[in-house]
Length: 68
Image 1 (cartoon, rainbow, N blue to C red):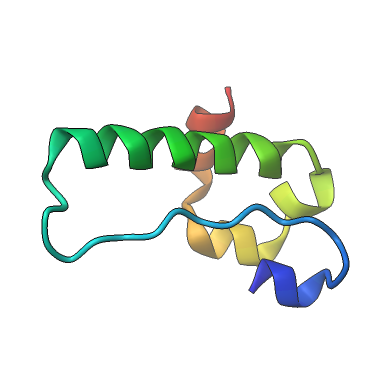
Image 2 (spheres, rainbow, N blue to C red):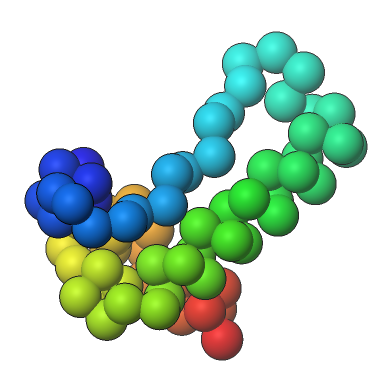
């Protein structure tokens, strides 16, 4: 949705989920690192970080913790 609202602007991809093997420690660590990178990329731009769509993705308190 973020990409659709800001066409032509780089918006990082949200890491994929898995339905099987999603408790594998290697997968979990890789996804955690990718989510961390996603949040840090979003944080670089106030208009993305403060967008309603982003807050629909993550609750406000969770976002603030991740970006701190």
